[in-house]
Length: 622
Image 1 (tube, one colour):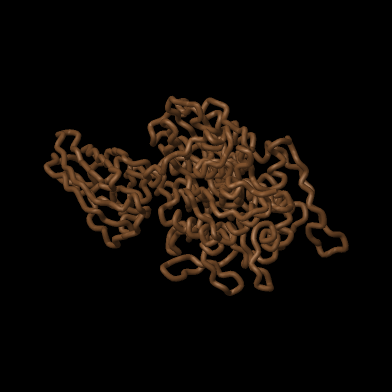
Image 2 (tube, helix red, strand yellow):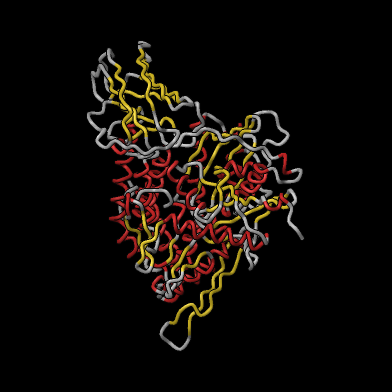
């Protein structure tokens, strides 16, 4: 059969997640995810180098990772377009089995069997496999694609993704933000004329992202966004894995973590059990001949996992996502009940407890009519079909959101301690206005110097210094008493208008700065520091909270060895010790991130943990 011109204009939608990737296309006006020759629709985002030096991707790489973990690259989405010296890359380095090194221009390279490979090149390998799958299914070459990325991606990350896709010979018609793609897949905006607010709760294998979208006409815009790039389904797996391993150690006095093959078999069983618990109340985890005890009889791992136990093990992980969602809504000034639609994205949203938690927060049943692992790719395919006008009704009526100007590099102020306080976040639509109230850091301070910076680093000296604004003539008062409102207005041409107003006297100072916030040009200005006199109102309380958390971490770490001796090998006791260690690790990450809401919650968790350990060890429970 001769292909029509429309058929020759096929556009594929590509979604590459932290854990899995998939590719979709529109067939007869209906979007569908393309399966590979084995019928699998999800491709593990893993690239391995075999002993023969051959590069393999996907499911085969996942199998090889059991033996060749140090030669298998994972977590590519967390690395693409970043600098080797960045905090994000340092975090990934501690989590993956392969070695990362710095290449030219501070670019991270994966070391696989002694060869340095760029992250972009590995990304291209994954995309090439998706392209091959699509061409094999469609029985024709594919030349065009719409690709999705997270809202938080910087311009450098977006460009790195674009280049990785282009190296496969694909033309990138558009890069679409993932929550926007999900909205397109759900048909948000079709036949609607009134404005809407759409919340996209995305919990995948390796990351969590919450986005508040605003629908005006046929344009979907990001109103607020927050997330945790290190919180995902893998963390749920790890909780079950620890529970199984500690239980097995109690019964047989053997640690399965010392046998990598056994550990990988348990991991596979854990992931399967977790998925089954979305529809079953309990599952039996059975891994026969898991390990030899040194006798003639091999040992088997057999244990029943109730859904209630999974919920107990992962309760704090789900709570963390809800805190992030509430924080993003509060920042946007939107109450949960004011959200019109809630979309669930990512495989972990199949978990009933997750769905119930989302419903509790928003007071409405979330939309769950499309496969959460595939919905982003489906939206990208619909967007691509609409761009080249090849889809049949009703898909032709899918709105094509215009390329909305969005901020690529954050704009903010340097506050006490040298940190950056962001007023305008990456992903914000332009033009935009942001306001925040600050105060003084010294008693009897009569002037405040505001340092305006551009960049995505948490540290002020790592961002570009745009200039400063000086507000003088303030009355002498105790520190933290005067209120100064800062107003940022970013125009579509990249001009930033800044005003500082003394709310007591109404005296005001204004200035304007030229920025690269919209094109993402990296122009950092080291050494922008100095004697900073600006302070956020809650900054002092934040510092006290951090200090309190550090004291609690120290106390818990001192109590843990005594607690382990006290509980012996009891299942309940070991589970409590494991939870305490996990609480400490999460607290350390919370201190680094410095998010006030998370820090307060972390402090409460540590207090409860410390009380529990004092009780176990016989210490005072003050």
